[in-house]
Image (cartoon, rainbow, N blue to C red; front, top):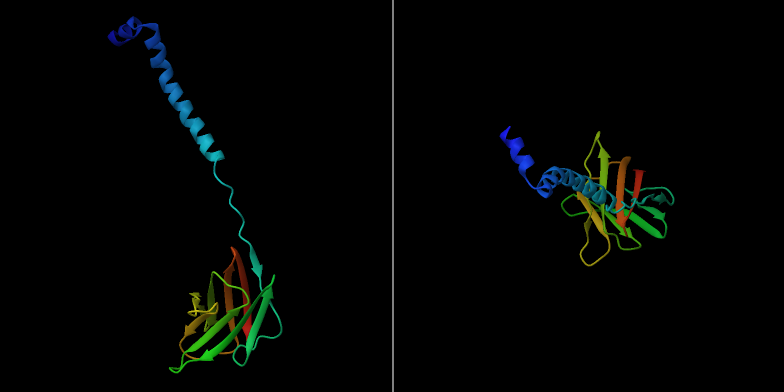
Length: 154
């Protein structure tokens, strides 16, 4: 009872402050949450565009061509001295990067394309020869848009 007597012996301003302070703290916390939730910037959708093949894809013998919205991509293979195979990607416009996956023997490991120094061309090197037919999945990025293709190369 002594705490209750002390409380009532306080000035009216202090009694009001002791009662209102926790309520104002909780109300401020809730208001800050609403304010922060409304201030988040909207997330822009990522454009994912399918590359369309132009003609038949004979990657082992010649090259594959794709295009979409002014972007044309040529894929061709090249053998190295040590028996490895390069798949070279030649875009008509500069790319920001790319990933390619080669599906063979039931497994696929996506790997990043590497830029050829001093050029806008990209390549992927892997050991052995390109078995045909083979499924290739390609994703490239240009100006914030993703371009993708899935091809069965002969």
